[in-house]
Figure 1 (tube, rainbow, N blue to C red):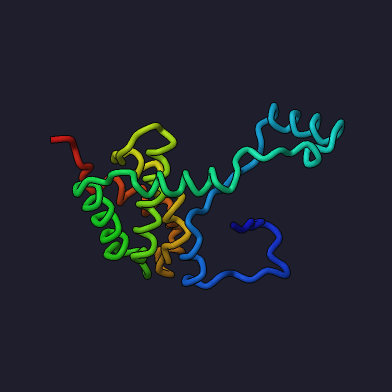
Figure 2 (cartoon, rainbow, N blue to C red; figure 1 turned 90 degrees about the vertical axis):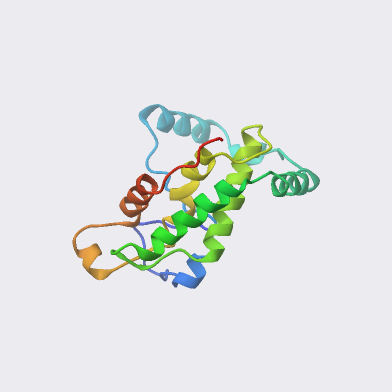
Length: 170
């Protein structure tokens, strides 16, 4: 787990691709809405919310969830779908370095976790699609020509999602 402030880079170093590949997801939070910001001001001006923190799960609960997620069923068409998506990142003309096998494993694990949170014992294409960007966007290395044209990994991943046929139930 790490945080990154896109504005203040002084004193920090850009991680090499091999290290970035070890982070499961990159999630950008953006700014809070007006109402959310008022809520933040209220909470932090009146109380110290950190003092009131309570655990929401025990270590045993987390281990149980991890073991349960590992047992979520993944059909052969879903595995093939993930592999086709990965292959497309490696052959895209604007990509210097596509996703690694570690990244495909992370996408699969994230899809299993989402299926579990959705109350299913199996992965569906939507699980993969919803996590495609957060799991993979920080792993693609875009060619210099593409970067000059303003192409970023999010755009490329969107194109790839549209290009690869989605498995359907038989």
